[in-house]
Length: 160
Length: 160
DNA sequence: ATTATAAATTATAAGCTTAAAGCTTTCTGT
DNA sequence: ACAGAAAGCTTTAAGCTTATAATTTATAAT
Image 1 (cartoon, rainbow over the protein chains, first blue to last red):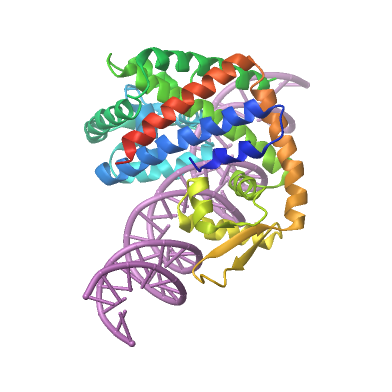
Image 2 (cartoon, protein in one colour):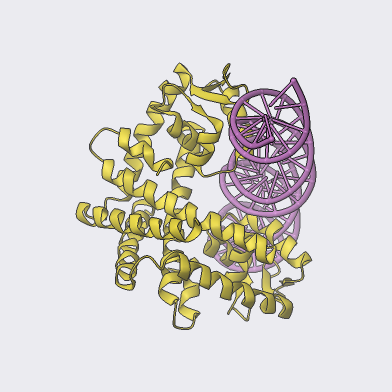
């Protein structure tokens, strides 16, 4: 290997473990998301953020408010304006003003969007399953558990 | 919790575990990197990609070729041009043509860059250590190990 | 009722990222 | 020596992302 993790080999002792873990987390995530991004573009002509947005909208038949979408996707609200614009232009989602609170914009999938997304989602799930197949189910569960602990640790450190 | 992982609760059984693991991996990484990005900007007025580039360059007293930098950072080559431009403009790194192979561009840290980066790196390490402190050292090692297995699984799946 | 505050979204500027095309330089096979 | 292929980098166009400021609408406190 010769990626970002090479850094740790040069670091002094102490707090080295955390840094190593963080870099491994980062490189693994990048590895997967770069590959997913590439395939989504090649096979469905869709970007990863667009797929992410559609994923959040799936199963929310009532649609979602932009602010909720922003929280779920962990991106800033300003980000969504353009992203939604493009997906609306493609006909996959639709904007909708709320009458009772006119500040709110709801976004929901169109029938076309739902149809196209279901194909993408199936492929996406297959890709992930294949990529992760080298990790035995039991270890997958273990890893998932450990990540939950880490995630909580990070959240607690950040929130007051 | 109410972030991206909420999706999995609606998915049918089978290959659910992989998807859950992937989404947890992604959200955890986003949580950490968003926070790191925020602090780097607030305290050092530097972006995360810039910090990443400087990290790769640290300890490489001889500098690095752009192509190597591209591999290590897992970004496309075209990405680096602008990134390097800005860091050169800031005086933290320097471009250098190789006489023996004039296609190659080497990038190395300036003294100023080295000085400023050492402050950033120290803070960065402290932040990570604090954020990860809720995960016992033994579990950190376990998680690091499991991620190595996963990383290999992903690499093998991708590479022919 | 009026004003102040907060919430939800959009606009803007700077920077990041990719894919694809293009340029220069080097290597390879003949 | 020469043509073709490959390597290394840059450019371009489209899209993503953040932070900040502005806009509109709703709520709360006089």
